[in-house]
Length: 174
Image 1 (cartoon, one colour):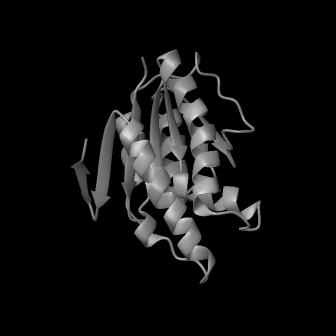
Image 2 (cartoon, rainbow, N blue to C red):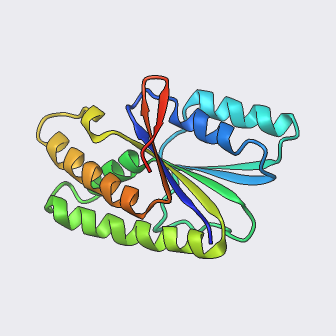
């Protein structure tokens, strides 16, 4: 049975680098980025590959509803990130529905995705920003913050381990 690990905290916290460091010695890993990757994380993965620390794949603009993953092949996945996924998911619908509608839809797709990972024995580190740190134009911010907050809460409940980043400190919550 695989593990699901949630890394959460402020937007500028080093979640991606810490997740990569945690599994840098694995022989096969994939970084699933909902948006364009942060430069530091990409540089670190390239450094690891050049140093012979396993085989890393990078998948940009990843969507668990559309894209499949090769669960028997990789031992670890890093999914970056929940807050970007929520923002993209909601923006495709022009913000017409309620927060509970979006939460149900997102958790259904993520639940199936995480079940597949767990059942395969593969491990997943999920990165998400703290909902309080999301800054958008007025009107949309409240909806997106509400959905990110609840999705984070539900993933934390499902996760085997939860790490909260505050500044340079990593606090194990579960």
